[in-house]
Length: 292
Image 1 (cartoon, rainbow, N blue to C red):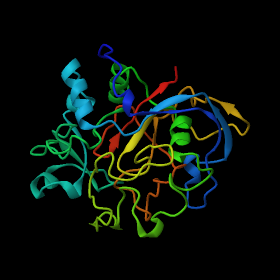
Image 2 (cartoon, rainbow, N blue to C red; image 1 turned 120 degrees about the horizontal axis):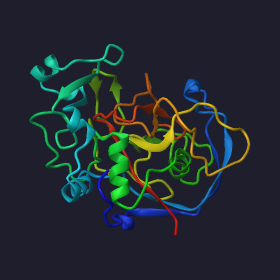
Image 3 (cartoon, helix red, strand yellow; image 1 turned 180 degrees about the vertical axis):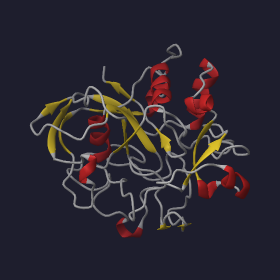
Image 4 (cartoon, one colour; image 1 turned 60 degrees about the vertical axis):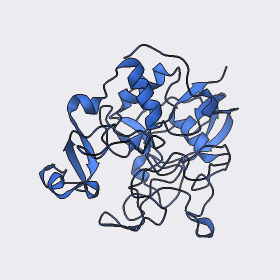
């Protein structure tokens, strides 16, 4: 892990006073196997959380200061949505049987999100992607921050709304307005881009929730500090940090590839997991920090 640097980005953090909120859901459109429920009371201490997901420009500053090399760079490959690839690269890149829309692309990393020939030249304000959990922790430590716990993340995403489906309410597109960068059309073959984007969007492309936090739904999955688990206490819990171990780390928020036909995990209570060393073109993070 690189040495810690100065505390950065505090002007782009929101301080939340903590308190009690109802975490989880019994939404029938949810995934019970994901452990979205039961609804339970959680009490949190005050904390700060980034207004935006960590941007490419911010991650580039971290790399320039420390020489950090991401796990995708060390592995020399990462997963890219196959529809973004030119024909030849798509043909030669292996795909998982279960999720064939992903291609394992040699040379894909945070600087080259779609592999060789791509760049982030015009995406400085987009969220950094192809970052593993360890990469995210390394950045957060250098920045004088940490990853949010899953409870902190959900409390922040709810924006003070109790048991609403999305960070802005219960309607996905209130008044016909898109509030998140997700997939429209027929997944995975046709994205109509009605929200304006096929891949990542700038971190401030959509209005914030009532806490002033942008894109807590869609755009990129965000790593949390917690190990994955699906058994939750039913009584009041204070500052939960998740299980002591698990099969992976929690990710929250959904991404630009989420679609109601198979993955409506852009709902605020939705959750998934991934292995600590995994990365992909729709995985990023935001940081948190204890209140002074």
